[in-house]
Length: 229
Image (cartoon, rainbow, N blue to C red; front, top):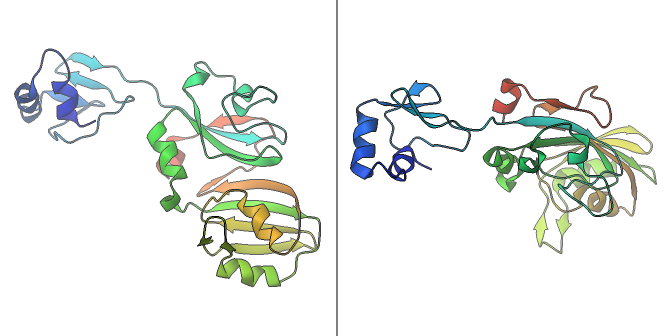
């Protein structure tokens, strides 16, 4: 919420008090003097009045995970292990996923307790490129490249997919770059050619690459990696 609203919601201050404190430069937001009444205060923000701490703020946490096949992209599941089961972290119930991967899909998954950050990544308008390595049952021809670049019509949603880039790696393998995340999109795109996807692995989201992170392992994102989104 806005800084002035945050202050006026405290029992000891009204709106006029809040405006005065801000204009007098007595409020520090994340260690910096703040005179902007509309500055955003989040659950992770540290807010001080002079030397008095008004909100300590949580520690924002951001992780990259190499999801294995057979693990569910969920916070809990009655039958399967979930991605949170792979994390050796306290307060795991505070964490949520920035997007999902199917049970039989492996690769890069982002996890955080920062809801604004994860929502920003998953909004349809974000158009962060997502790169997948695909294995198929039937051979992949060059015709796929042109069709995917034009976009495919999905009747169920009554929409045409955004242009996608396909790089053929072998007779039955390719690298596909999407700029959106429709339901089972990769499988449906190859299904246009009656070609079943038998292996799917996400290598990259935006500027973040999975790299050599071992299957089932995770790591903390750097400040630069978080800010890249």
